[in-house]
Image 1 (cartoon, helix red, strand yellow):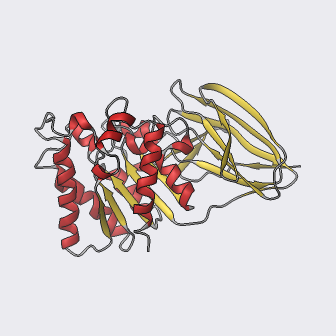
Image 2: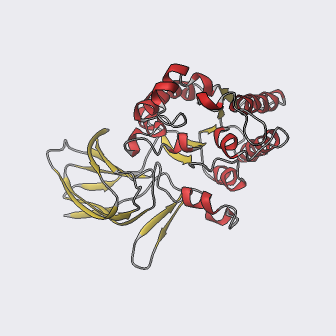
Image 3: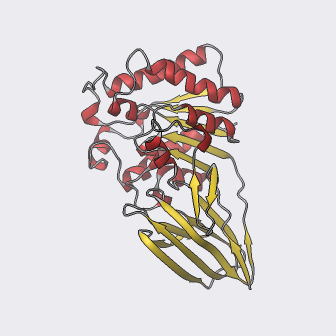
Length: 326
């Protein structure tokens, strides 16, 4: 009998307490600026997109952890098909007998994509168990709650997970609910992380919080992209403008801009950098990702897609993003 501990993918760093409890960082923790970035640090400590994989003919998956009251569930996949969805709220322990597997089956454990979480144990025990290192293109996606996907029923139904699993890509999900504000720590983290494709979905958090005005938004986005480009000179960067949010399209925020204004400014920055010679920079019009009718039907709060809405986003964005890979 062999016991193989989870080898996690999709995070920047992992912390382990003296007692062995594991927690995660999706951004470089040396780049925070307390107290200004405390909310950002809280979001980046959530385990969106973090997962582990084994090859096995069968065995026992043991999982012990503690999740916050708003914690999303775990997903367990066998050969790409979800076989278990496990609640993660509060203290919990699971012992799953994985029997009847085909030889050398792929077992994947996806951590809850939203909510604070610590892992005390995540092991697969069996006669034939090995940890699996991922292959395929490395994709970093940065964005707001619409990339973080709190409203998805489970971690593998977030649109970045659907795109990554469907295309065989190695995902780093930097969706940061409410905190997609072009922070230097986010650009620096992307700059430090190996990548074959980078996507940035920006604008909605800046509109909602009125963080940037007509004077400041464009230069902030320009600097963010240029920091990434300096580290990844020949990696495709795909900028996705804000998806539709019908009540916000023409409603001015505290600095006098509508969501449509942020979308247009995002496109203008990309066009400017392309004209300066960045042939690896691309633009996707977020207003085409969901139709107006889909935005009305699939955004119960007028802002966040539901699980089906995220599935539509994945269907629309997957071929667009794949087209930009070299």
